[in-house]
Amino acid sequence: DVKVTQSSRYLVKRTGEKVFLECVQDMDHENMFWYRQDPGLGLRLIYFSYDVKMKEKGDIPEGYSVSREKKERFSLILESASTNQTSMYLCASSSLQGTSDNEQFFGPGTRLTVL
Amino acid sequence: EDQVTQSPEALRLQEGESSSLNCSYTVSGLRGLFWYRQDPGKGPEFLFTLYSAGEEKEKERLKATLTKKESFLHITAPKPEDSATYLCAVRNPYSGGGADGLTFGKGTHLIIQP
Image 1 (spheres, each protein chain N blue to C red):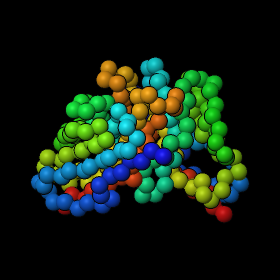
Image 2: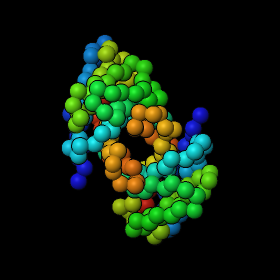
Image 3: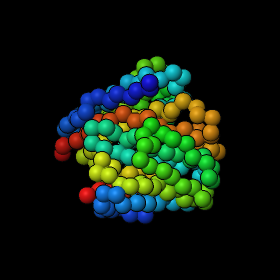
Image 4: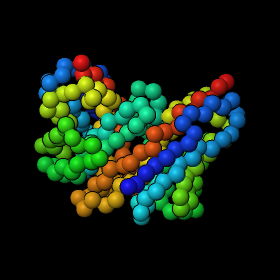
């Protein structure tokens, strides 16, 4: 089974801190994604990557950056955390050569609170 | 701008009471409509992908259908374990880079009472 893991289930940080959220997938997927999920707003795409060192902005990239140095790992970075970045962060991966469903596989999420 | 609208926001059913969830979408050139299930505190779990009007897919008590403007998730004789939030999403327009994210609706929170 595809497994997407995220480094923390819960994280509490202070305003202005630099925050790293890590995501690892074990199925050799080319594509990786970061979303945030907020009540009343649903899931929104922050950044995605289709190859090592490649990245593309999603719908809400402001205040975030990403890093993909290895195929299996995709990191989301909050350069200077702010309270409006308190959210559930979800990582996902998918394969370029996968099934016809083209599904994304999601991790369990990291609930980040910025105080 | 592409949009995905789900209705109702919440639905409470009795066990065995069949119903349908709606997902309306506006996108130029649909490249896939996805249904996911999400349990509290967990990541979304993939259910179905539909690509063209008239397509249908089934899994246990769930059946997804697609028209040119909307998709329905039909739940037949639901059980309490079907309680979850059901998310609909469309694949974003081709970005040229080999991967595309999803645009999600806000979900339908389904509760099945015993």
